[in-house]
Image (cartoon, rainbow, N blue to C red; front, side):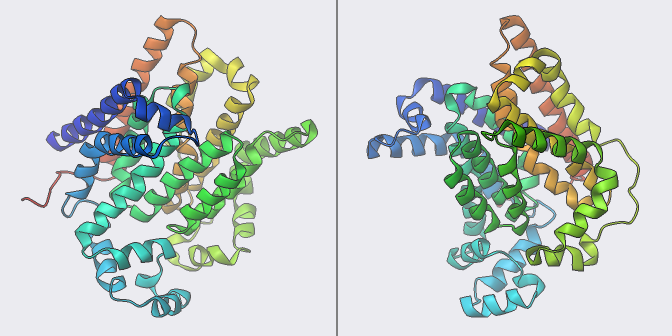
Length: 382
């Protein structure tokens, strides 16, 4: 329990630092506005402030020793890839050799890092900087600190295990923000960047379809199709997976037994624990606002796809990681919707509820989903 308390204290420290500095430091507020005319000095000041805010979490991640189910695997991968020339890597990667089957972006990180410890530091940098940028682009619409808190409560422990996918998730969150801001060029750039660290990030391109189109008929057709997929997913699963096998980039996920799909769904409703406590309070209070504004509707559509992706995990637990893609939208969706609550007292009650919920979710994930692999915390100093 002391390790869990340590994690929570560090996460809350970074969240509080962000909230305080975002409110009181002009540099980070200017940085958040995304102004192109931002002076270089102010931009660098904002970056330094952001890094200082993330320092507690950054150090906790970077100084760990042996923590995480894949810690040793990534160390072994580094020892091999660090010495592997680029052309040799391409050849072995194309041949499907297991230890060489890491994406191009992560290969280069292994090549440039002089040691495994430095690689972990680089991992942390690529995980957190895109997240800070994503939340900054949404700064004036919600609480900066609360968004960081939600991200860390839902993704931090996982990031110590699935490092490549965790890096991809950070770029995907930034892609979602660009999608909400109708910056489609940067949306695609971020998805490509994410795919450079984990191939499954390519499916994020499908979220381009959840945006608001100018054609009302096209929006209606899209909404009907989404409703059919969400509600009828168990019946459609085999068809959708068969369609996915047509894309060569996903061949590996269907040719290895570890990623194979069971012919029968394991009946369970535990996945509802991830969905209902998050959406029900907001839906109860703000269902009209959630469905009226184009921006809120887009976020809600992204979040709704967590339902079928959670159910996909009932065919193979490995695929539950895909549910983390739409789960990311909570980072801006929940704080944004709380700002829509008119009555101050209701807003405070909901805020307290969500803080308690995410603390519970964090503890639950460590003890149940993570099977205690991230506790007790150990660091390099013994």
